[in-house]
Image (tube, rainbow, N blue to C red):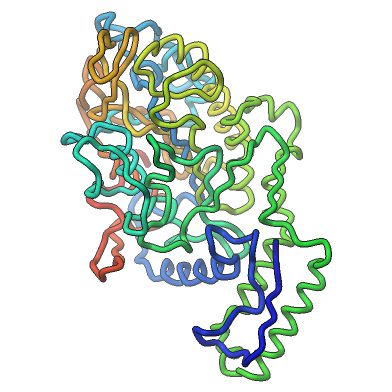
Length: 485
């Protein structure tokens, strides 16, 4: 909750000065909201300095929803069916037609097939893992657009640190921040989790805590409490506003040059209050305001209600929302709506009976809802795991693969992309006859990250200085997939 700290001494802007207003429960990962808004304003100034770009699709998106399927679904069974492949490749599911001519999906996605006219598929994304075949390294590459140089050769996750390269959401928060009084980067549903590590590739790393995400992992099926946005009962907004007005007067009296230049924290205190006063921002988290029918359309599951929340956050002006599948990347796949996609065993019953019914309803509901509200044109939706699953169905115990399971497969997989200027109903790229390798128009995960930046109007070639004053690119070596636009 908010607290006011009165402290003796001069009221002038210098590093030793304590703020009159501090935000306690409202702090975003250790920073007061006014400071976060201040940093966002500085970032906005930086972003305005970026060069314009007339290339196709540049700046067409106002916001991005990233649905990250940690654990990684099988691309062959969902997105890229191979009906003419041998049985040990094609598996148990048959392809079904969609509303996009020529696009087929696995039979486990019947509701999504009806929304195919609104989205496109890329079936030729892949990476040579060079020994990094485990979840951790693949997650880091996907989330940051950089090689995991600090990972082990097996790709095992390491604890997140301020030396990490920033996540795509944090880059967006710095170079395309939300309007004043809103939030730039929000993560919901679940943190990224691999082995014993939490938050792999999800934070701002060396950009600093100002650009870390605002995290909200309360159960969206229940009323979200949001204590971070609560004022104490004895401190109504009107009283808080009067104290801020008093501070402004003191600043003008004692430091008129600072007040005149507007370089102090005053404007950001006011923005913090405007966020608290904004019905649109606070109410975005109140899913109970939606109709029962719409909530049911998304599905009464953790993932389904998180997708609905993502739509509401984008409506409220949030620039980048990440919805992470609730199960850990390397959890043993279990029955139920929140189980893992890491199907080393029992791939087909897990997908048919548990994972895909939830995923199909929720994702199709999100795309249908965005399209119906006219939001899809300016909202880019990306759905992807950290890699695909092996074409050949496993038997035995190699890499912990049991009967009916599929192993990790980073060499070739698929992702869904919609809105934000992307032409709908197309299939970009092609995998070979077994879905094992890209056959045409191969793209890298870094190209996807560059495409997100490009759509938001951020030049992927932008450089910044790291903590050692070395130049860093936003994306290590990727380029936008212009054929999507």
